[in-house]
Amino acid sequence: MTDAEKAAKVLEALNAAEREPPQAALSMLNGLVGLVQGDGEQPLEVEEARSSAFMAICEIGKALHRGQPSDHLWQPAISATARWKSLAR
Image (cartoon, rainbow, N blue to C red; front, side, top):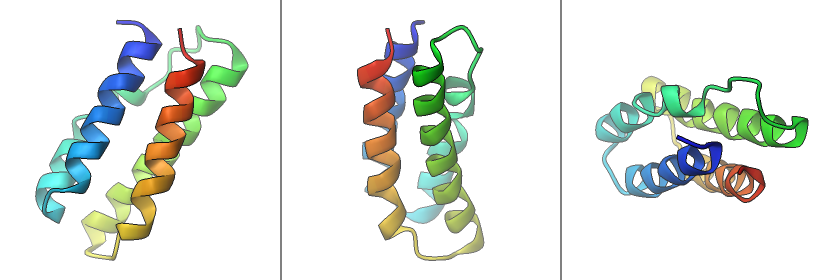
């Protein structure tokens, strides 16, 4: 699977998870870990975008796990993932 395909799947899952209750969303986010992990074979700009998406998704996961508000975290994660998708090949 290409990086662009991975990013597209992550973006789709983020959009779906945002509409779910916290525990279901957390489960969906946990399922994305394998897709968001880098392999270091992409140009630095793509790796940085992927890393930003990964960190933003982790922030949502931490908030959900702790029962904290996460509404303000979704858009940055979606934007970071969209950027990753636009740069990936």
